[in-house]
Image (cartoon, rainbow, N blue to C red):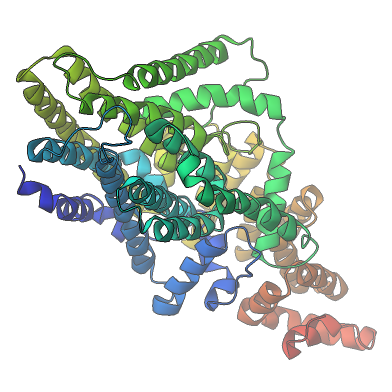
Length: 593
């Protein structure tokens, strides 16, 4: 076992590539169109402004484009490497959690023992393996646009490991080198903050770890000042971004959508719903069945709802279990109990509290239109998985005595390792579904048949495959389920235009713009419809409105596919009114309005 421990990181990577090989065969899907395929800012490394709240995530997409263009394999490989790196970080974090100098360490410290170290490494290996192979992670790994979640988790976990290393050096006899680790910890925190907003909890997670494992923060106060300052990064970035809402680009559009979503549901309704959502998240981690992208999850408008009350009581029980485990683990071990038993308890308590802390940015009082998404579990799952595995080891050591304790720990690790087999099998199936967008969306429709957005997405796929009648039928169904779904009106209008039914297409596109007057795609599509119906002035007005929303994207669309249809309209506009085609001249000359 001692010799095998050296190969644990290698085994994590090899098994990871084998289990996730299906993800490398998937293509672009869903929001990948907005974030990657149609995002012109990714064409160069300096296309995304530093003020963007997710600057690092977009920079990684730009790096993919510069290296390999729009080759989906490269993007998926990058995502997989991030996930494997996160699994390795979990392995090293758990190993480091058992290492603390004896002179000032908390309960759970004991002199180095080769056999015990190998057992601890095995525990860390099995836990990292479960995180790596869990099928609920597919949405954050196989779905390219959710690189934001996995990449933010990478910097998050790296910061935690660097903090632990720095803390250990601070507590050692030499007490040298800790400041360098703290410096890299702060840098990793900065990168996490500029990748996704979930990183806002990172300084609090470091404080939580410090308080649980080291019983105080006096020796590391120097690092908390810059960590506290990093808390300003996300609100300042969002403030700078929202100040450009009248401008152009994907950055402003994403922020606009977030603000609209935040106003679509009240804070209390969202909070009450999230009690049930978090309970469902826990269920998914223990029993990952019926996984899907979009959920038709019931919304709770009041706390006095049986589902909501039961979920809240269950969550309070989980928190109470964490608090009780922490209290008992802080006491010195007695009798024949090994001192390391308390470390397993500390890890379990930290994992439970970390789970709720990491979920707090997306599952508390900040409203988001979609109340549940599997990718939001990616980082929090680290906490609950380590809580479960360490809790099992903790109970094994509590129940058994003497020489049977080593056998009990080995049996617990073997049991956990066997759990990877069904998890890996479900993961393989899930990634096979992701390979074909049509198979993927059909699977989701079968599980949530009453969601209008799913039929809109399938209608979009049908348009891309030239199946226009099927697209019209699906978008019609989406509109029947949700008459305010302007994207479905735009989709159906586009299908009508491609079928030569320009008048029907114009009617649908006009209806879409009545619901959302600033929908860029509806404006450019209606400009095309007007041009085909010889409504020159109206076509140019729509094109001008689109240009005001996003000049670069309008110029790109005009040059790619709309210029031929608008050229006659432009000639007619010049005939009727000199200068009446100035918007076309702006597009052709590349001027900025």
